[in-house]
Image 1: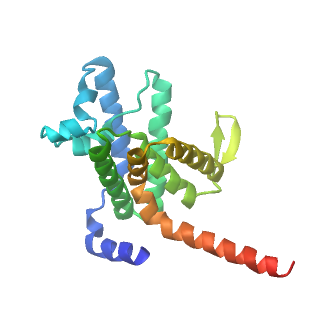
Image 2: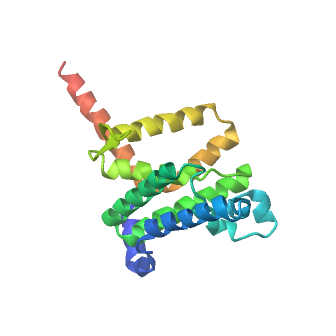
Length: 212
């Protein structure tokens, strides 16, 4: 996977979108203001839906990433958008703008395929993919849970993965496929490394058991 990414970056690296997370957060803020104060039906026009796409509303292939958190509380909105900006910017700083843009575009593609299969799509899946990537790259970063309790990101990532797995186990077959597609970017970027780490851990445990 790393060799493929390296070749892609050498050939198309100039097409990365710098500060992508900032544009996403600002776009969601603008849409939230419009929906709350000017035109409440806007969400129905920009969300990703199979019926809309089948009626030729192709703008939904892009506009769905600007659907804001569905909250009436401005404080929750600010926290959600800051989280998106912080996580996205951290990933871009680690990878560079091209890899982060590619990661997000692959996530969008997975969301679109998932929507075509299921008819609808939850924007939270893309946020999950960003957070899981952040937890893998910065596992020991500490954040304040509820603004009080310091906790390492890796534990939050494990908790979020457990919740996602729980939903996956209870979902129907098509929804299971949709949930996998929703994280296709994470699996492509981190799957081989996670699998290799799992195999190495099994080998270490097997070696230790030989001497017991």
